Amino acid sequence: MTKILEIRWHGRGGQGAKTAANLLAEAASAVGRYIQAFPEYGPERRGAPVTSFTRISPKPIRIRSAVTNPDVVVVLDPTLMVATDLTEGLVDDGVIVVNTERSPGKVRDQLDTKHFKIFTVNADRISTEAIGRRIPNTPMLGAVIRATDMLEYEPFIEQMEDELNKKFSGRPEIVSGNLEAIKRAYKEVQAE
Amino acid sequence: MNLATQPENRVALTGNEAVAHAMKQINPDVVAAYPITPQTEIVQIFSGFVADGDVDTVFERVESEHSAMSAAVGAAAAGARAMTATSANGLALMWEILYIAASNRLPIVMPVVNRALSAPINIHCDHSDTMGARDSGWIQLFSENAQEAYDNTLQAIRIAEHPDVELPVMVCLDGFIISHAMDNLFMLPDEMVTKFIGLRKPEYSLLDVDNPATYGPLDLQDWYFEHKRQQVEGMKKALDVIPQIAVEYEELTGREYGFFEAYRASDAEALMIVLGSTAGTAKDVVDAMRDEGHPVGLIKLRTFRPFPMQQLVSALAGRRAVAVMDRSDTFSTAGGPLFHGVRHALYDCERAPLTSNYIYGLGGRDVKPHDLRKVFDDTLRMGESGRVSQPITYLGVRE
Image (tube, rainbow over all chains, first blue to last red; front, side):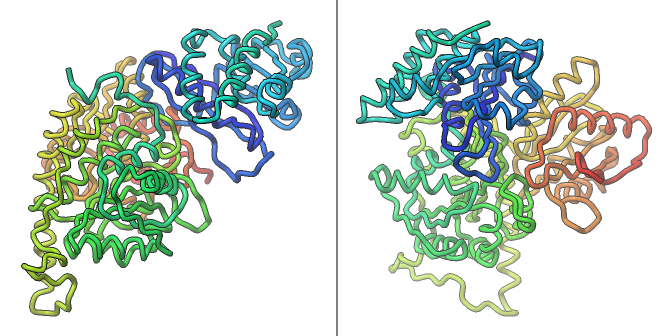
């Protein structure tokens, strides 16, 4: 059985964790991968901790269980680090990408772990500057593409442009702002 | 090259989006609907197609599911192609009219996004809603993924409207697991769908004033029984029609449909029978266990009503042991509804396997590969021991 890449997104209701999970899946699907993307539905409230999931595979995906041992964890909101067990089930050599102004080393200290590859990017600042709103989900996509080798950068950017044009047709400034945010986060993401 | 599987027709959609797009391509005359989670998106997305002029449908926003099904009944009796969609308590509220739709032989097609019934209130998947309607006279097709939900919706139109059948069809898809999960599927080009489904040509309709007909009049001791007998005949004919439509659909798409899918089943000693999305996870488990040399296989039942008794018996005869998976309970203390059907079917079978029942996944309880592996392990052991030590097991529950 081919290994399926599993990604868990942590955010707060309203931050776009579901949209990010779907956008990544759509981009992967457009370049011929097989995908699943789904949020965990509970009592939905703006600001409450939420999770979403993306599966990517070179072969059709049949499993319908929840994701329990993700390969990648993406954290859209740094305040979740105190409220949530972000690394629960994350495989030992897994990747964690956090939206924070702090360095990966500081995040490692806080997580108090020897495992995982830790990446950080200030997606709040990037989205505020590029889009005009603190909406970290699209820049985090750029950071995830850099932190993993799941998709090639150029085709990914082309697909994101297509998807954003579909979602925000007639609002080119939103499309260009999001694209700029993705590209900046891709460049600015910090590794240890 | 097969038009229906060209790369440009491969899309990434949620199950609800896939069904809404199937409805757009069907372009029904009338859709009457009321929102309920997790179905709401289907009619919400479809109402967008109505507002944008993508379909010619008369879209009726009614005040309840009872009214939604009543409006569909009226429209279908008038000769229209009528659809609605619902879930859980919405389906329960339709109960009275479900029987009226089926008994009047009205070919309404209704996607049902499977969700647990209240109480306690729960929005997640199990099959207790559609199992409550299993004896209402509707044909019931279950779907493993978004592709099958889409394909079943298109085939349902042809099955329902077939002159030998003339019965309503529920297309069942698992709430959230399918309805809200983005998935890859191939869609047919619009014109291919239009050609496949054709136009509805009812033999009798209220608006056909040259051939006046009455629907649903008083029918007492002298004829009611005959009408019920005819209704059973429609269901029996569905057993002929469902495979015919599947063959036509396969010619278009290359995708094979039948009463059930037998996965690595032909030489299996222990089989699992399951409905809906859990079949996908079970296939992964079958492959993993086959790699280790265990003779396991899967029957994924697509057609629950009518119940393909003879075909199931042929597939199960001579096997050692069968685990029947029910995502609902009957509270009879005698097992779930699928178990009742399967065990009953096997009674006259000379080489009947041992059967046991697993109630699983109620209220959306996650079903993990290791849960299903345990079922296969137990079923292999049951086959080896030659006896059923535990007929009914509640899988993955705290007791």
